[in-house]
Length: 403
Image 1 (cartoon, rainbow, N blue to C red):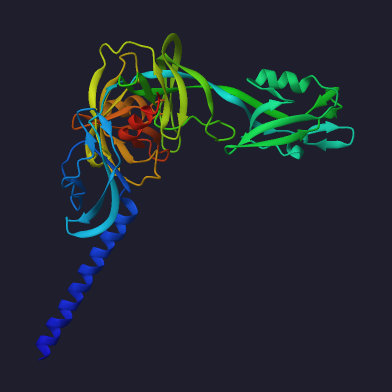
Image 2: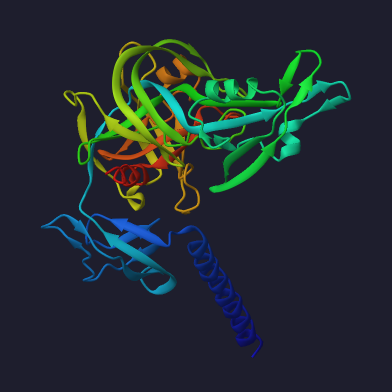
């Protein structure tokens, strides 16, 4: 009898452990697996060899006409048995793009003029800040002043400098909404004229890496992350921009705690026009030859796996070269746009040249199992041999929005 009770207790403990394990898998899957999946075949989808999506007969793409249709509802299950969560599955034709890895120069002009700061003005009655008192904030986009549309920072500066103390009626765009303000200049004793106390910017320049060219709609995709204003940290709204070929002239190596960078000389060789600055990269039209570029299949996000891969990037005059890396983590959370993967540089030659990942390598394509799986986005400053990457699938999907 005692022996039987002991067996029952052991069985109860084992059942409890199994249930805890199963509910943990369910909780993890519900939190971390996507609510929407794109796939390029009718094969069952597997995550970490534990979670599966049974495609059954849910063919949701017109392969003959190469068109997308509405996604179907499916369930993610543990080992194909225990339901975890419902997900929408969209089947599409397999995508192919020309992979680049070239360094390029970025010239962007904003749609409107960005307020990057306000400052005090010294008056006869002490210091005051007219722009701040009017309600203007860092990150506001000035659309018009006194009903005149503002197109660049010099126009804004000339308008503000040409005044005799009269109020300005200003329209700004803030968080997607338009707001009206009245800005009253004050007389600066030290400068002998009226001032409004505001700094503005209308353009920026930088260096990055081209990820791919999509011949389906003649688009270019790069960076894998947005270009943000250095002062406001807001995504810069693009009016237009240029992508030009750039030559690497020097490398400042990354060290623990400090990200290095590529130094490049811009050329007059335009490779594309830029029109979209988004959370998953910058996009536009390419204006260059694709001769010599290699066509790669684009991996669906669920095809990306931990393990060895290669990074295609430019760090010297030899142009794009492949270097060994390892994908150490894969995340399917949909709100994790720029950090779908963690990548570690394992190639000794690249580490010797750059210290790991440096600024300017953002957008470098990641190749695994013969497919384009992602693009580098950020260096992990405390460990520069590691960095984050975005799924290539997201970038290519974004590029298709260019009509």
